[in-house]
Length: 240
Image (cartoon, rainbow, N blue to C red):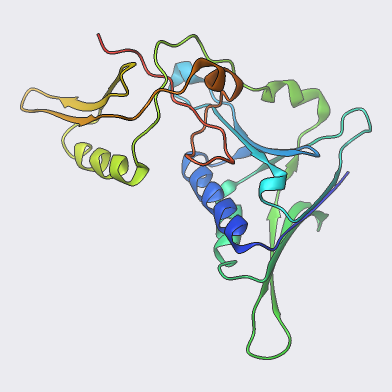
């Protein structure tokens, strides 16, 4: 069982860092699934008890200049690791403006995901900063617990507005209520609303667009990032 990867392109590195930062805010621990073509960040929780399910799928060719892995067996060429995403996020924060970032699976008293960051230096030599992130290797008999979650049929799919704008609105609304109502329709309209005994506030978004069914069906995920390299989708009840 082996894994090593290398990122040289700064744009790819920054994007992978943003993905890691987002995941670290959603989960204290998650599963990293490695295959020859893709990486998956998975969080399986009991939604009925208020938990969150996350399925983040990344095409390795969109991020890594080099990518090599050997799974647990020839007929099961994958690796499942349990890790703390906050540790990965912290390691990647040291990689701003790095020349290269190398990630590999090592064994240093315990299984680790080792992140080696090559930083530019004023001298001819480079500085190497190494982070050893402890991980747990998930046995093959438990892999079925980390299948892609099924999503019930939905009435409306809609593209989100600019995330910075949406975040700003929600952060202001949370000071007035602990719940927000999300409404959408097939005309590309979405509302964010709070209703309390004292106040009712609604923010309207228009001309967002509705992705067609074939795109939704083929790119269904539970984790959302508005980028062509990361599939995403929200499922929202239709406006009455």
